[in-house]
Length: 186
Image (cartoon, rainbow, N blue to C red):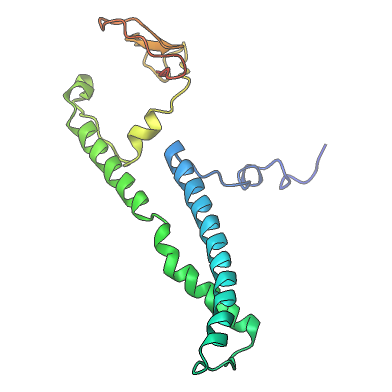
């Protein structure tokens, strides 16, 4: 028996692990794309820096009025040239992409707030989107778990409709079939 109650099994120690940031699939995809674009930007800047030094030597050899003496050492001059190209080409990184998706999320959350079919009559409560990326997060639901005791559902479970492997089941809706791979999960 452990005499020390303040060990690794305490609540505070169990909850101080890694922080899991919740991100949507679109956010993760955009982050990967931005990293890929930035890496290509660095490679292009390195290539341009190397090409620049090759052309500068040729240019200085042809034009006598340009000083062949460098004000900085070759590594320092290369460093400044690289950062100059990196800054010049930084417009390749599409920061507007994040802003546009946030506006799209905002528009979707406004439509959720306006949706009359999402009104909950027993509590006289309309739907409220408290998060702009709510619609994207709802589209990623893969499984729904419920209990039999009524703790979560107040013992009122109504099956409306679901889609399994592209086949829609239930409800008064027409039977819509989705192509395999584009199945929606309810």
